[in-house]
Image 1 (cartoon, rainbow, N blue to C red):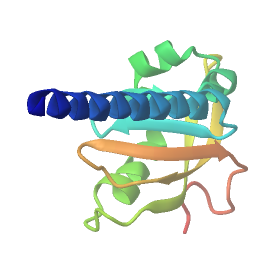
Image 2 (image 1 turned 30 degrees about the horizontal axis):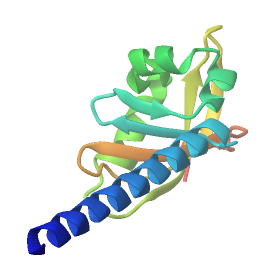
Image 3 (image 1 turned 30 degrees about the vertical axis):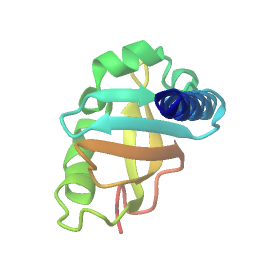
Length: 143
């Protein structure tokens, strides 16, 4: 009977863990589906892991297309250096970067201006949230 109780306890823990993981998956799914802001998980190399569905409405590309293109190809070329200096090249890796701006290419070829808050790379991933914004006086990232 001792072994049965241990197996039963382990099975209960596994079931609780599976339920918790399912709840987390559903929460993430709903966040990325219904968020009004633009949510993005990407990598320093330019690849995009996951974007919220509002990206489709804003850029005109499907989320699958956005992931396959990558952010280095979607960001205006003149804004790439500023992204690297503000986000990637900074030494304080635990300090979030807030209120930086970049222009992103839409499917029609025009650009939309976005205001960002993001993490420094954590395990190679960048977690960010953006929304559309007017161009600040003085140009992109003039702070």
